[in-house]
Length: 220
Image (cartoon, rainbow, N blue to C red; front, side):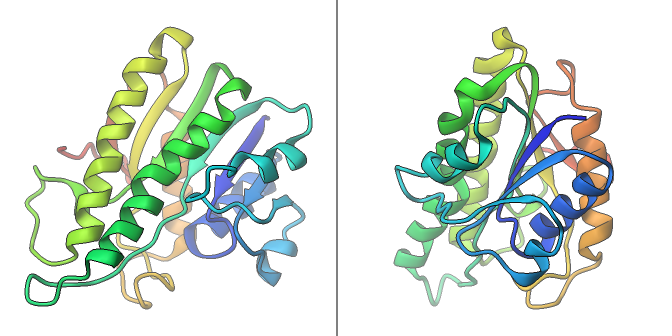
């Protein structure tokens, strides 16, 4: 068993990732801006005040981690705004880039000294950011920010390969959460179980690739 850090841990997929990892004996640091009663009830170590848009994002994590190394980092925090070409929201798009694309990069940078050989990074992205999958329109800020995150994941995998740190870009599925307004095809427990399975099997051969929680590989 190892030490896991999960961002966006107070609800939805992040909460369920923490629940399942903790239940199987991992030492879980649940990172979020504000804890929820559901998260506090899990028994994980909770790092509040983790805002992935801030330059000092690592400070709260450092206090909770102590001297621990990080074996698995799951960058799950995200934000979704819906817009169309007729009703664009450029401020909202910038927020989505700050959270969805630059946020995970800030977390990786802050925790890199704690990631040793064999460590794994899971970046929770979305098929909405896949060009090869055929975008269906709308959600410009979200789609573009997730495409940028996909590039960050591929780039990180290349740069961290000599250190034997492995990186996967992961699509959780269309999940019924507060972010999706309760719509979706799967519930958080099913999605989280698939994401954990993909992280478990992550190695040098699978690093730098884009996977659905169900195991299918996704086109960039």
